[in-house]
Structure formats: C-alpha cells, structure tokens
Length: 243
Length: 193
Image (tube, rainbow over all chains, first blue to last red; front, side):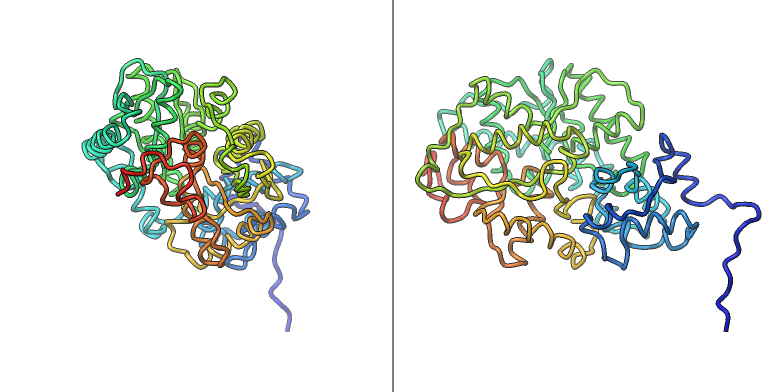
C-alpha cells in the first residue's frame, strides 16, 4: 500500500517558523541550517522526549507546527544558547523554543514556572517566592544585627535598602533571604571590606526572573522595568547582578 | 539574573542610565586592586582541588570569555592555581548544568537529572573534590546531581570560598562545605548556632 504522498507546491502557508522569523533580527538565521548537527551533538537535552535541537528546527522548517508547539521538550531545553555558540550559521534555536513556549495556553505551562512568575508579580519585590518588601527588610535587618554583634570586626557593616546615591544597585536571588539567610553574609562582608557603596531596592530586589522562563514578554518586561525604575530613583550607576 | 536584565532592557527598548554588570567582574577587579586581600595559603598543605561551573546566563549569554577569565582568576587566587582543574569543555563552550531556563521548577525531574548527567560526568572527570557554582540555580542543580549520581562532591558558592580564604567565614556560613573544610579558618567559632 502506498504511503500518503506529501504534496508540495501551491500557495505556501504561513507557519510558526515564519512568525518567529518575523520577530528576530536577520530572521534568527532560521533558514540557514546546514543540518550539520553540531547543535545536537553538544546539547544535554538531546534525546529527551525523542527530540534534539536540529530535529526541532527541521520540524519547524517543514511546517510541523502542531508537533513543535506541543512537545514538552521546549521546557527541557534550558535556552542555554550553546547550540548558537557552536553553530556555523549562528541559528537562534533558543528563540524558536522561547516562542514555542509562548504558544502554550498559560494554564498548561509547567505549574512551578507559572507559579514562580505569578509570585513575582504579586508584590513589588519581584521575588519568585512572593516575599514582600517588608519581609525582606525584616530579614536583612535582623540578620545584619545578629552578625554585627557576633562578629564585632563587622559592627559597622551595612546592608542598606533604598540608599540614595549608592553606586551599585544589587539584586539577590530571593531563595537566599528566605531559605538560607546566612548565605547573604559572605557577600555583604566582601562588599564591606572593599568599601563598596551599594544598596538593595525595596522594589525589584529579587534577582530571579521566572517570567522570562515562562516566555511571557509583558511580565518579563514588567519585572525589568520595576527594578530599572527603582535603580533610577536611587541614582545608581551600576546594576549589579549576583548571578 | 544578568541575562534577564540585559536582554530585557534591549528587547523591550527600556531606556536606562546605568550599566548592567555581574559581580564576578568586580571580585576580580577588587582582588587586582588589592582591596580584597585573598590568598590561598589555607590550601597549601590541604591541596583540595576545585573546578568551576561557567554559568550560561553570565558567560555565554552575557559577557563571554572575558568574564569566564575573571571567574578563573578569582578562583585561582582563592584556592591556589595548582589546585584548580578546569572542566572540558569550558568557558563559553561549557555545558548548561540543567538547572536553568526554569527546568528546576518545571516538574520534569527525571528529564532534568538525565540532562545533568553530562555535567556530573564532566565534573567527575576533573577529579576535583569541589565544584564552585556561582548562581543559585546552578548550585541547586549540581548539588542534586552530586547526590543523585553518587559523586558526593560538595558544591559551594564563590562568595563562601572568597570569605574562607580571607579568614572571615563564620561557623554558620559553612552549610555547603564538606567535612574537610568545616573546621578550616573558622571566624568566631564561638558564635556557632
């Protein structure tokens, strides 16, 4: 029995890949694949869900939109960009993945990522743990006082929040103040020893951004804007990331 | 996260009056300027070996090999050049650990550990006793890989090692150090909780 023939020709329909190409500078080079496989051979996600970066790109190029936008593999690719780094044509496969994530109905996206993004939108901290600015300030002040007393060499150490005119606007992964506050101390001590003029912001201090991982542009933008506005208000010259 | 801020400012065309930096660059600068007087004497006889994870968000996706060099300069200054062993591949060509991109929160645990097998093998191949991981997600993922695949190498933050070498790491700041370093250079041991 004959397999069903794939018909080519006729009016080309717009595909998911065409849409992504329209979004990217130089179309993300998505048309330039030489099928060499350098991407897949060095990708730790190769083989998961019977997928790999080259296959994903080829499927998108063939217009297999249903498969490309439904495979859970897009949540297993970490968008680490090693595939671009090794690609002779610098094809932006991670952007294809990002946009495929974006096609998922919001409530079908992984709950942990969705929840972490929603937590960050809940208040002005931008913390994936939903920590409020007040709770953050309490933890910082409490643990600072504890260490100033226990380690008198650091009695003048500061951990300021909203210090006007500080050079550095520092962010912090919010799991540190919430689940392992002692881990903040080594960082504060280093900043103290070098005489850095730094501050956290009461708004936008959370360093993580799960809305980017959720592939939700508006929320990603909101979090960056929130931190940016605070850094501007405080007059900081350097936005300093710990990670 | 360095990448979320840098890429976000660009993608959403947000005007800003600051530079976006990562602290690794400053650690290196402060050591070069003599403001951070680290040294590796504590490890001269112990000879404990370290490797380092290149965080994708900071190295490959943001500042490239120059910040990977800064990271190595800091690590070598702190643990001793002869006690540093690089992974292969490394710098911008290093593998993601599998904690990134939301993978840690995605619920796909089996796949995440399978993804990380490559990282675990890479670390074991160095023969290092410790892996230094600078960002929170890398730390959590590699820590789990170390337990899951039975390597049981401790995974530590960079700031922990900087403060240990400065002799200012207190007893309560040593959660992730292995038994071989728990008692080394303890600052105010009487404050243990």
